[in-house]
Image (tube, rainbow, N blue to C red; front, top):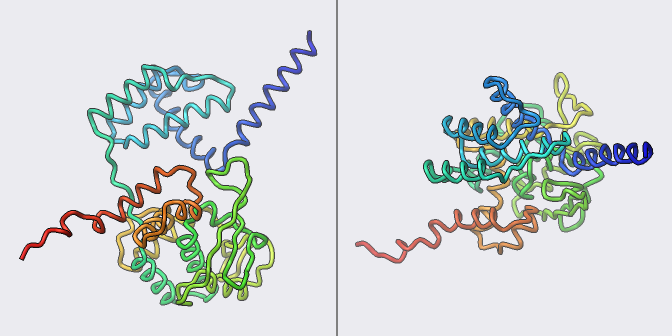
Amino acid sequence: MNDIITDIKVLQEETLINLKSSKASNTVRAYKSDFSDFGVFCAQNGFKSLPSEPKVVSLYLTHLSTKDAKMSTLKRRLVSIGVIHKLKGHYLDTKHPAIIENIMGIKRRKGSFQKAKKPILINSLKKIINVIDQQKKEEIKKLRDRSIILIGFSGGFRRNEIVSLDYDDLDFVPEGLKLSIRRSKTDQFGEGFTKALPYFDSSQYCPVVSLKKLLDLSKIRSGPVFRRFSKGSKLSENRLTDQTVALLIKEYLNLAGIDSQNFSGHSLRSGFATSAAESGVEERNIMAMTGHKSTEMVRRYIKEANLFKNNALNKIKIY
């Protein structure tokens, strides 16, 4: 009997490890960050955060709604609270009527429309690259930053995919560059996939040319492609963080005279998808590059791209 109990405990521990491994590290960090806010709310109001109960979670969501949190934020916080409970071996019914009906009521009263951050489109991308080239920085720093921007846009990359690239993930071929993505947000089983970036007609804005120059100058032949700089202009062995990429994007937007408040670290990825949609690229081909598993987000990009293109007013002539 004791052996059976011991085996069950081992299985429980292994199961918890598997649950943690099923989520990308960045995703787990985001869940923990969300849950910490829930923890503060519970502590301030005398509730237990772990394990919690549906009525407490419902009160927390109402609290967020009074702070003008977006519906997407409420839904994400709910998912985070549920996941942390699972990871800690607790059960929480996140579909309990006390939670679901409250969310429906909040949505009806406040609406769910949210103004998304803007995509970085071709004209803005060119302005950013031009302003990077004009900076009085060491050439290696400019090459690193322009390569991040160009590859991020051209491959429809998530920020964590950009910073996760290693030298061994690169394969330069006559047509351009193949990049092996070992794991991403929608590839939780780590099956990996390959993105291909062809050479551009304009070498100034070509991600393949830019990255080649960076590798030649830096002499990087293994390890992370995009690294931090130590004092001065010496490249360290340390990988850049996805937060640094977001800060770089905002920095160069401001330098280019573009208000960075309207953009985010996701704007390169959404910029690619929107620009591709504007150019008439088929939905499935956009998804093949971005790695989206659901058509919902891609169709939102296509809808945004077609706001003026398929506008009914274009058929009305006012003289």
